[in-house]
Length: 463
Image (cartoon, rainbow, N blue to C red; front, side):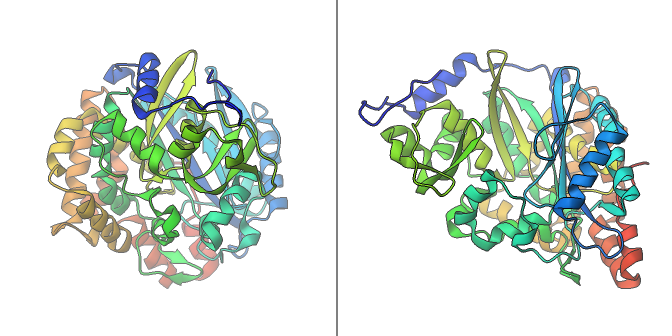
């Protein structure tokens, strides 16, 4: 465990290289491609069936208790959070930043088949319970009729700690939902796979764009939810969007240490730094005056090193995010892809996971296809995907062609990893037709009354 530093003690001289060496000493050094584990976090938008208004806190409590009653394996734990075990790993159904958003967090699995089975055993329970309560579990990246404001925000220390730095922009994220696939990586793989995956952010966003309607109007965009991130304040901007170029794990650590740091955690407490700072400064000075609990003046002891590092990694909101954690005496890593609007069906959710799984298994070929593009080009292509979906462009090349190649490369990767190709059927159908879910939502929005439109995007979690 890292040594606590008190104000009257000399700070321990943590450097990037020392931290990197400490991680390397216990980090998994290699992973068999067919034993590589994946996990999923799936957010769902829950609205009132009668008019599409956001679920209230009281209604969310009904939903969570209803899920526990429908499946006794789920155990209520704390404030409206459900837990269960799957082969020794915890699963959770928990609240998110927005009151009307519910997140399912699954266990890591070595096959897409096991991942799918877990989703099919759990997500439909949320959908059925919601319907019985007069709610709709929408398969959409955004609550289409909600107006973001403070009333939509989940109470809690974590969110209050972020609030001073994000201002009213934090409310934009109280009504949006995303799928986060994460994949196990070794320390040496982190920079290479980050660089490859970030080049596929634009076509992933284009294929899975599913949030065109915002505050009851056609936004004209394919993914208004993903566009929210570009509205962040300048202080937070370095933590979102396309991650900066990295060539080594030391570059990754430099990135994390020098980016703005606003909040960290100590046990169950979320602590806001008194002023925006950097993790390098916090670790370097060891000052107990760096933190305040929520907005109070009580200071706490700084523990330099891994705890802050892990928390700061969690604070990153880049489209590809490295995560590091410790379990069973081993430091384990994963890359999380934070880009895709929540699809309607389990086949859509699994297709996102299959894209990531296949690209990682076929990383060299995938990187070769888009290696010529730098961060500026990738960023511009991402904006084009957010605005125009598959009708956008990637540095002058039609986005649809890039998306088709992405699916082809992922398909080759699934074969290399021994995975079933059927998990890409959803994405294949989209790139074959050139029409994503945002296009379908927009058409239905202009042709249907509100109640029928809401039913058209209700999450029917069967295929």
